[in-house]
Image 1: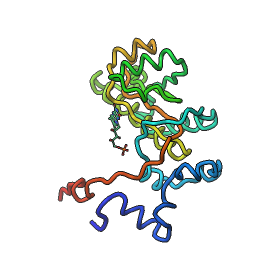
Image 2: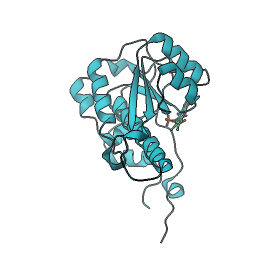
Image 3: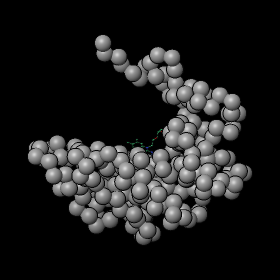
Image 4: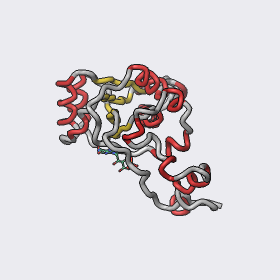
Length: 210
Ligand SMILES: Cc1cc2nc3c(=O)[nH]c(=O)nc-3n(C[C@H](O)[C@H](O)[C@H](O)COP(=O)(O)O)c2cc1C
């Protein structure tokens, strides 16, 4: 295998670009300059390679048009049989956000500008398989949708944190659903742009079976 880590791909793709110019979104000083055309055209590999978990958000509202794109992106994800076995709850209520902080092992950053709860909805998956398989499909549907939403958020100059450490029953009670949550995605404007994280080499990750 030629490449050693994911960031090597970025270096090869953008050979002539200075390292600081590869960061997306730009550090704070340049954030105001990002225009909507630039963010919509952001290269998907750059988005993937630069996305970082963010736990400190600016106290700034996320524009509705950005939210619409994030929801649309989530809805482009593949789903088992195309049945879209998941639902997204957009939590706008401040009291419910606080309940979600508690349901998420008291992680304070769950109280963020945009809080999305991705839930499994196996009843939508109209396939003739055992219920265990349908549940597995719906958790994969909900997870993929959240991952697509997370990438879309990054490409729009936003940052996010994926919350998997949740008490499912507490989340269900807080948002008033009988659907099991798979994750909470918290989104907002980042306080600080973080550098891409180093990863194991791809040769450690990929197990070739010949
Ligand atoms: C399944 C899953 C569960 C996670 N749960 C939490 C969580 O409960 N709290 C948290 O702060 N981060 C959580 N994260 C974020 C990871 O800690 C983060 O993605 C990881 O440290 C890698 O950092 P990066 O996203 O900046 O590359 C979770 C991520 C995943 C994929």
